[in-house]
Image (spheres, one colour):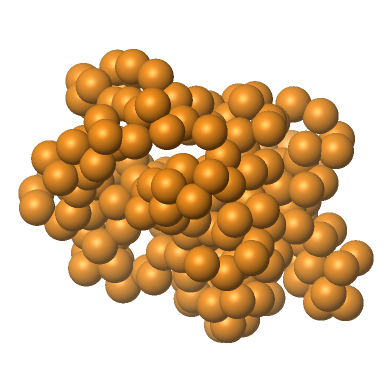
Length: 217
């Protein structure tokens, strides 16, 4: 496992984002772990988070003109990733985010930030993916703004769970929209980190493996 992945899992645990126990997910599934991204609450935390997204961006060879953060959770993620790319890697990439409703006064428009132009490559920045809803909602807005190419999407954790069928939500998104989705870490990475003592949670390890066997894709 690359070093930045181990550091990120430890960072999630220390931030109270990676939790072990018994949780009922929105899908109704009973899970032995939970990713609560709402616990990234400080300037220091969001700055560090942006650095991990930037490392994932570079590690996967993604090339984009603009980072797009779907409202609302994606907004600080896209901003912090753009800052990290510029500050830590001398890579200047634009960022923008969508409005929930188009603005009909002032500068107007559906997006705030770097203007989108025909031919631009964009990378979507999101927290987690459960069903691909955020992507489905942002694509029509992007298409209405300019003829851009969605080069990739980055999420923090790929739960590697079955979506509407036997494939994972990440696989379904690629199959349906042709958008490759990269994650900083996967559920398998988290299980390995627990096994290796990078983070706690050993008491939930057996249940995590059972959950993976039942719902994993």
